[in-house]
Each structure stands twice: as C-alpha cells, then as structure tokens.
Amino acid sequence: MSILVYAELKDGKGTKSAFEAVSYAKKASETVGGDVIAVTVGAINGDGGLGNYGASKVLNAAIDGADGGQMAKVVEAAMNQTGAGLLVASNDETGKVVAPRAAVRLNAGFVAGVTGVPDTSGGLTVSKGVFSGKATAKVQVDGDKKVIAIVPNSFGLHAGGSDAAVESISVDAGAAKITVKQFNPTSTDGSIPLPEADLVVSAGRGLKGPENWGMVEELARELGAATACSRPVSDIGWRPHHEHVGQTGIAIRPTLYIAIGISGAIQHLAGVNSSKVIVVVNKDPEAPFFKAADYGIVGDAFEVVPKLIEAVKGLKGN
Amino acid sequence: MKILVCISKAPDTTSRIAFTDGDTKFDENGVQFIVNPYDEWYALVRGLELKETLGGSVTTVTVGGADNDPVIRKALAIGADNAVRIDADPADSFDVASQIVSYAKDQGFDLVLTGKETINYNSGVTGALIAEMLDMPYVALATKLDVDGGTATITREVPGGTEVVEVATPVVLSAAKGMAEQRIPNMRGIMAARTKPLEVVAGVPSTGQTSIVSYALPPAKGDVKLVDAENVAELVRLLHEEAKVI
Ligand SMILES: Cc1cc2nc3c(=O)[nH]c(=O)nc-3n(C[C@H](O)[C@H](O)[C@H](O)COP(=O)(O)OP(=O)(O)OC[C@H]3O[C@@H](n4cnc5c(N)ncnc54)[C@H](O)[C@@H]3O)c2cc1C
Ligand SMILES: Nc1ncnc2c1ncn2[C@@H]1O[C@H](COP(=O)(O)O)[C@@H](O)[C@H]1O
Image 1 (cartoon, rainbow over the protein chains, first blue to last red):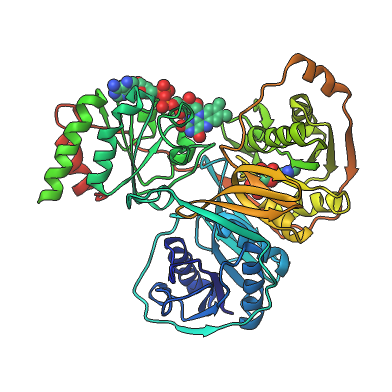
Image 2: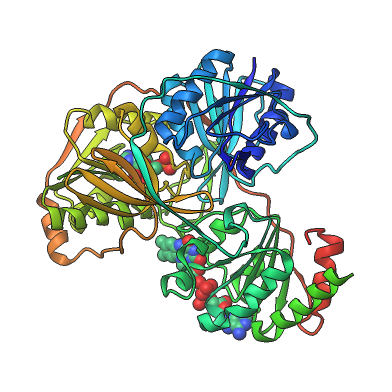
C-alpha cells in the first residue's frame, strides 16, 4: 500500500518540512511497504524537488491561495485515488491544520508530534514527544486509515532520489474561507527561521540588556545560525517574541544549541533539550543548565563570546 | 457574542515527570495540576477581553473526570461565566474533539478558542479537529484576534513569518503567545467562582483510534565537558572535530 505525504510548497518548491516528511515516508516505506506519493497544492516547479527525497510521484492540485480546509479536501481525494493507507505530514504551522482536518475526513487513527519512524512489528506504533520534551510515548495507531504528523527537525533530510513524475489532480475543494490580507516575513535580512535552523545561538537575562545582543548576532552570523532567547528576555521586549524558546515558546531540535547567560530553568530546557549538542556559557558554575549540557564554559559572556567569534572566524577561514 | 474556550488540565511546568505501572501511566504523585498555560493565559483571557468590549458570554468546556474541577474553578475565578465538563476519559485528541463537538454543535458559538497545545501531549491539533467536525474555518497559532461584526481579523504564525487573515465567524482558533496577558484571579473572582454553574454532561462513545502503549524518559546525559574560559578555541575545535556539528 502506498504512503501519501502532504508536502507544502513555497514558490513552487517543497519546504524543508516537506522534504523531511517525504524523507520520513521513504524510510517508513522500507517497513510498511509501497511507494511514496506526495500531494501538493498550488503552483509547482517541476517536481518541486520532492523526487530527490524519495517521492516516486507527485500529485498536484493547482489551487491558488488554498486554505487548510481546501487542502484537506485535496489530501482526502489523493488518499482515495491512490488507495494509500498512511498519510504523513509535517507538524509545522500548515501541517497542524491540514493533517487533523484530513484525519477527520478520512476517519483515521491520528497522531501528531511524532518523532520516530513507525514500528510495524505488531500493527503500527510510532514514538511521540510528550511532557514538552521531557519524555516520549509509544503510540499504537489503529484504524483502516492512519495519519501521522511529524515534528519538524526530528528526522532530518535524506536526499539521493531521482525526479518524480508529476500528475495533476482535480478536486472540487469549494471556496477558501480564510482571506490572507498580509504576510510579514520574520526576517528580512535573509537569516534562518528558528524552527528550521540546524544551529542556534541563544541568550538570556545574563546579557543584561538588548544593547548587548550585537555579539550574539555576530556569533550566529559567523556560524550560519539562527538566534533565540529565554522567555524573560522576550517578555521585557529585549528580543522579539518569535525567538522565545521553551515550554511556552517554541520547541526546537537543532544539531547545536549554544546557550549564553541562560540559567537552564526546567521550562527553558523543555524547548531545547532535544538538541543534539548543547553548549552552555555561564558565569555561575552551579547554573542548572550545565547538567543538561554536552560542553560548557564557566565564564563571563562578555569575555567568552568575543573570543568564540574569533575562534569560529579562524575555523571558517581555514 | 458567544465564546467557547477549551480548557485542559496539565501538570505544573516544574513537575518531576515519572511513570508508574510498568511505564504505562503518568505518575501523579506529588504533582500539582494547573490550567494548561496556553488555554488560560491566551485563549481564556482574550475571550474575556472580547466579551468585555463586545458583550456576550464566555463558557469553558473540559473533557475529563471530576479531578478537573479545581482547574475549571480557576477558569471561572479568572472570569468565565459558566463551565461545562464532559464526563469522559478521552482516548486521544480525536476523541477530545468529538466530545467537545457533541456538546457544542447546536449551541451557536461564534468563537471556539483552544490553546496552542497542551504541555503534556504537545499535539496542537484539537482545534483543527473540532473545526473540521463542525465544518468551520480554523486558524492555528493565532497571536492577535479582533472581531468586528461577523468578521474576525487574526494574526497567525505561518512558516517563515506571520500573516494577517480575515474570516467570517463562526471560527475555531488556537491561541499562542501575544494574544493576551495572563490575569491573576482576585478574591472576588475566587468567591464568585464557587457559585458559578459547572454543568456536567455525559460523554459520547469514544472515537479515538490510538492508544499509548508506554512512556519513556530520555536517556540521561553524560557529564558536561568543561573547557577553560581562557581556551575558547578548544571549544570550537571540539565542536568541529569531536562533535562534528560545525
Ligand atoms: C509556567 C512557566 C512557563 C515558562 N516558560 C518558559 C519558556 O518557555 N522559556 C523560558 O526560557 N523560560 C520559561 N519560564 C521562565 C523560567 O522559569 C526562567 O525564569 C527563565 O528561563 C530564566 O531566564 P534566564 O535564564 O534568561 O534568566 P535568569 O534565570 O535570570 O538567568 C540568567 C543567567 O545568566 C547568568 N549570567 C549572568 N551574568 C552573566 C555573564 N556576564 N556571563 C555569563 N552568564 C551570566 C546567570 O548566572 C544566570 O544563570 C517559564 C516559567 C513559568 C512559571
Ligand atoms: N481534555 C480536554 N478538554 C478540553 N479541551 C482540551 C482537552 N485537551 C485539549 N484541549 C484543548 O485543545 C488544545 C490543544 O490540545 P492538544 O491538541 O492536545 O495539544 C488545548 O490547548 C486545549 O485548549
């Protein structure tokens, strides 16, 4: 049985989350069996880059400015047309709308927040993050149709496929109920969106004031990293809200998280402890963050960070 | 305007997370329960602010047993007019949504507000499930909400930025940070909450098709490798050569 992937397009090309969802489905197909077919909505450029990650076919519905309700109708039609039993989507901002809506339309067993590939040894089980990154749960998914939505950055990208065939699919999806009036990109300077970033430099109240973020931004720039912050820092307006990570901010899972002047409160850790490698710079050797860290420097950020920038420049210069 | 706010119970953010019964149950021993922060700080408070300016009522709905009543009273103390508890032990988000829909479908709510996600299950999908079941539009991750006549203007998070969207009510949405400021209940609110109506209704048969087999805690981290503050270049070398992350 085929696996269908809802793949989000931006400017005709799959997004990073879409590539990840296709990569995940490709991996899952090794145990579940079947082909990986992607379904897309809106203008597509070639195969949108989806074949490279393992899609053998891309179904495209040429609906402009579709809302989540319309997208779910397209996904439902694609499930029926392909006879797929499993739908994979990213649990990103769009996937959080499309996957559940499709699950209702398909009356499917549905799990969101999945972080591991399916285990098919007895039915279908997947692992999912729970308690804000403090634990995982093994979830059994029943039902004739199944829908799983995976956490961005939990699986990674696995390229190496060839171009996929693109077919159009026509669906009576009705009219859009949501009208977009305005789009405000988070960063106009070309820096990396935090949820997708592989490398993240983050700072907390230890930096004393917003005027001291220059060195944080410079370090991020040198590394090609995104910037983040602790909650009090965004609450007092030193940094924008979208940089706030933690239990009540966003949860991220980069390969490298550098925390500067952040104490490591449990609510902060909840958003970052799935990072592969954690580096902590804090002048207090008793800061709880050191217990969650892989590497640490006990020292004053105002002395350590400039040296770090120089060392990174040295490395990149080689 | 008739507003419904979906309220769930969650372990306090500082709770020690542990499991019992062969890792199949969350260990509630010594755990303090709170209103799920997104539901309380953002969904409920914005609902109350809209009611205060536009008139109408705010009802909360919770799916669960009587152990939810203290957090429901907290929501009433903050200012909700009345509360409904659907007496069921929900299997998963799909089931929660069906239970809420079975109650809400003919009540004529103009707005259904949920939190961005529960801090215990972190799915963030219940609102979308409710919306599809009610055939209503749904706006996820809303950070700003205004209603004028029958039109809601909402700012939402989308990949790579934010969008301002317009949608006709009734609409379902999930509330994220930015929507409102936390309100601390005052003595009058707490007193009033004791006598506000908390209606208990029976649930419908479960529609969940998933089940949690077991829980696991993440593997313990090894000890941190400390690098001397005078030798920062060594850290960069380790990240490059040992951890291979830069
Ligand atoms: C319900 C709830 C939800 C929450 N959600 C979140 C969340 O999502 N995200 C979040 O981050 N927090 C959250 N918090 C807040 C959390 O509990 C902490 O208060 C917060 O994370 C602390 O931020 P901080 O580490 O920046 O500041 P502080 O705790 O003030 O720590 C500053 C650190 O900087 C160090 N420092 C000071 N000067 C220097 C220097 N010159 N050089 C190096 N180090 C220095 C200090 O030693 C200290 O460790 C939440 C709290 C609650 C109650
Ligand atoms: N048992 C419940 N009763 C009422 N509302 C709930 C319940 N569980 C979840 N919700 C609502 O749905 C939102 C998203 O939950 P979830 O999809 O589980 O992350 C929460 O923030 C609540 O507003």
